Image (cartoon, rainbow, N blue to C red):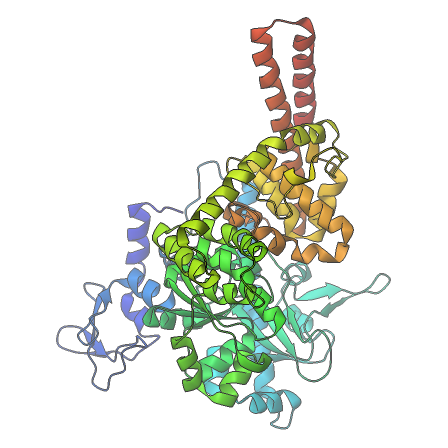
Length: 618
């Protein structure tokens, strides 16, 4: 969102740089301003050299030479983007944010107000969890677990670790005492209504160590809870809410962004304890995914802080698969991903406890490019056979095509060719030929698409399509698709409920763009063969499309994540896709009519217009 110069000046004037910086270092008056020790983690000093001018509202470190104003401090120290810094300071000064456009309606105003209320509920819940942990005796299992994991008090406070009791409604009662409406507690996904026939609500989290998930402004937006003793699931995460979208937040960034900027490197791990363990061991430039595949939004978050990313997932097969899925996302974000395979199936927490932080730093210093690491995995049984070379070409093509930097792409081609034992020119030409073949395949499938249009209930390719025109690993081109069809695709893949609604709507015949239609066809085939494969659908398709970020719900739709709003958005999508299809049919008929007048074509156009009118009225 762009802000007017007047609004930026208003926000700057309403805040004091001294108040912001004083949260992180002690400032003392001097003749010309204030001085203190530099708060930036890469500058450890004994003699204060960090100067702040309250009059000019600027800072300057005479030691490390960092300097700037209140916005640059929040960007460089907290890892905020400029808009996030503006929003943080506006909220701090109780300044209303400007409307995104002059047509902002009452519904959007209500949504924004609801988000503010949910933020307050999460803040109260976080305070409750922290207080519950403080009250526990030393012999309590939760305190023993913390001791066993070796978590210091400094780390517990830095990550605001808390505890929730085994009581069924401890948090509900606490929030009720604070006069928080039960519908807000439920919408924040902190409580659920009891089963049919019973009254009241119960806490979603019970008898768990609690880890708040903070947004870039340091506000709790969700929670992760780890079971203390026996029980399933081991980790329980908050469902998505209007203020929490899992694919848009990396755990720990509120605490670690400053270190990532300082080190100019981000280490990506999979869970809370891995991140906290590395942080406590002195490796603090870390961020964590939260039980979900890496998304394009994650890639953009990291790119904002650094271009150097090290993927440090578990050494087991699941961790390796997660690293492989992250490769196209990180390459598309234009960062330089490296990867580490930990020995003996260890996770990062195990490794640092067994071998120490120094050993892990040495591993990271030698980490190969993630693409090369994954190529090595693909080549485990490589014997240089012709069929293996062709298979590797097919595996490499979608990954190489997504790299924005042509120089990096060419270097990867040369390195892959060397490892495969083929000339670099051969590999480059082989990949180019595959691109040409796929273009021919796309052309030959036009007849198939037409048949699908005429028979919407069919989701299978007709039997009369020659096998050689249907590649085993198709390449789907999404470029040029309408916003409505891309939104339909991303929403359908977002949840099983959405995908079932998509299937029930029987709308595939109205999807105009061939690439989108073919992606939905493949997803449908996989899903109908095994319903349990839904959670892997997106990761399966990522390598097959030219723009994998389009498989995820875009930022523009990110405000509508409560269940009812999402259902409405999906229904609107169905309507818009059908309307677009009818409009395209009408345009084609109008073109044909111009070339060859016909009363029959005129009648068809009128019928289409009537159908569009009925559709838009419904």
